[in-house]
Amino acid sequence: MRVAFLGLGIMGHAMASNLAKAGHEVAVWNRTPGKQVEGARDAATPAAAAQGAEVVWLCVSDTAAVESVLFGPDGVEKSLAEGMIIADSSTISPSATVKFAERVRAKGVAYVDAPMTGSKIGAGNGTLIFMVGGDEATIERLKPLFAAMGKKIFRMGDTGKGQATKLAMNLQIALIFEGFAEALTLATKLGVEPQQLLSLIEATMVRSGVVDYKGPFVLQRDFTPNFPLRLMHKDIRLTLEAAKEARVKLPALETVEEIYEMATEDGHQDLDYAATLTLLEKWAGVQVKGEAA
Ligand code: NA7
Image (tube, rainbow, N blue to C red; front, top):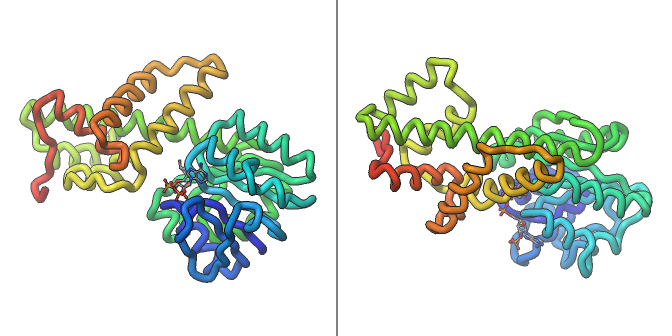
């Protein structure tokens, strides 16, 4: 298929590469020039990338970025044509997504929100899991592209429901990790060996995918970003905003948001979100480490 891929960050670059590798005709654009994707054509603007494309796929930071790529000067809107599909894998506001979709629908363009999970590793090896909102026929047309970038798609409902689901998923990741980080900090302060605690967690119902994945990194004190703290913080804020719009109260997430705020003040925004642990350590006066760290 002819695809314009906009946004070549950690996730987008790997996704666009996989589309090109799968034989799709890909044009790429990134706000900061100089990023290339093997097998893809470089475009100077979002509008130039989208010109003649069947599908325009976005993966940029946040709601404002999606809005500017779509509707800003030289935005995708200039090249919209009847029958085109816009797919957005950025994590952004569900209500803004619905508004963007309405605006392009007037031009006969379908809009699918397709945020994903699977992190940098899943993007690299094409095993992402997509949570998708949009009509079934449109999603069906996108299947070859989903197959090149991921291993599974879950249709969650109409446009906007992919984003709503993503926020509900990241809410859980943030809270599960915070529970793990608090447990590690307390246990360490009370004299328990962190590696022993992790082994016990793995053998019991406390086990979780989040802890399986993050535990080894944390015990090695490796906070290089798989999922940067600034992006998890953005998602937490988006979740609280969506909750406010829907008149839902999320007291645990509100507290965790304050921890992200303080971690940002400490300069950790570009580290992995697991670096929120360092705040708890600072307050407790301990450091959590595995034997080899
Ligand atoms: P990264 O690696 O931080 O990449 C973000 C990308 O978004 C990168 O290409 C940025 O371009 C682009 N960006 C940011 N702001 C803008 C604006 N205003 N206009 C156009 N492009 C912009 O993030 P990930 O790849 O890890 O994640 C991307 C999304 O997926 C995000 O929503 C996650 O929550 C999930 P730059 O190179 O900085 O010019």
